Image 1 (tube, rainbow, N blue to C red):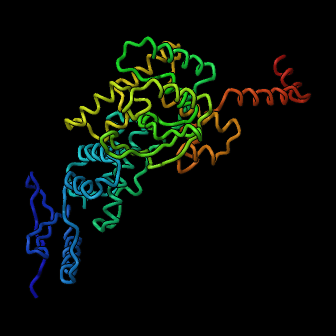
Image 2 (image 1 turned 45 degrees about the horizontal axis):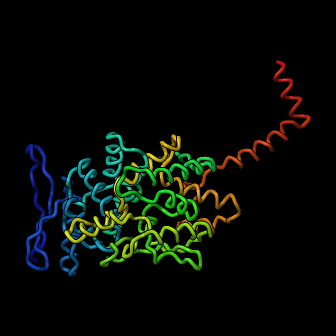
Image 3 (image 1 turned 90 degrees about the horizontal axis):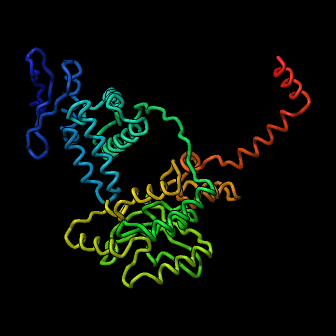
Length: 399
């Protein structure tokens, strides 16, 4: 019987070694060559026999592709189903993987390549959190290939992730919040930035709702129900008036507003010219965005933060308020921490925050408030002042 698959060798670049590859024709009559990546004759023969059986049974192996092409193929299949930021993370991770192990066939990637990739990332100075993020991106890419039947197993499935020490969650104190609001009002009234965000109102709403920056800047007047005193966090479609924007984790939710904030929003709406749908995007900036959209200079990634120099403006407010540490996202952390320590349950905080698991809320958003420390300190003082402990402390102090 005529063999459908031939086992051939290919010399290395230095001519001193060689590796086996399979030579056959696919179901369309096109010649295919699959590199086996080794010089083990017994292993190569088993692989040739397996391929022979698969071809005779009408089963074909996945197409051989370099890693760069494998990435493009995967993103072509998933584009429109995942966020643009996810695709960008995949591209960055794959670029660094190729630098670490070469642009090899994706079918040849093994666990050891993942370990080599981790070492390369750490040597180039990547933080532990960044390395973990890249591992997650690659793990998901190869897992999709497994689910499609392109791979038998995920080479990144068991690649160990560097342990990242839990960072301290920073929140603003009540006194810092007061200084922030005061200086934000002055900044908005006397700022040289043009156009300028209504910072005082933006900070108030952030502290009241715990919304993310992108959620606030993509809020339209239709999202606010003045009668019910609520604000909806909802995605936006690409229309003549609005640009396409998606919520992180596609979590649509409704959040409460207090009466004072509703009145401030109503006053702000009354001052805005007609035809401007966004609450916190200045009218001049909205006009610029509309022009960019007409000329094809706007992408969905721009909608994540449609206001120019946002972080620079907020840092300027922090400096005027004499607050050395902080970022805009800390307003969200402050709100969530206040909710939990003022009576809301863990489930309620998780739901309002838009998290799927409370561990995410606990790890990244909840801080130990000063009042909790004071209560714990008072309890410790009572214990330490008991007769037995106080006697030991006095004895130790005397020695």
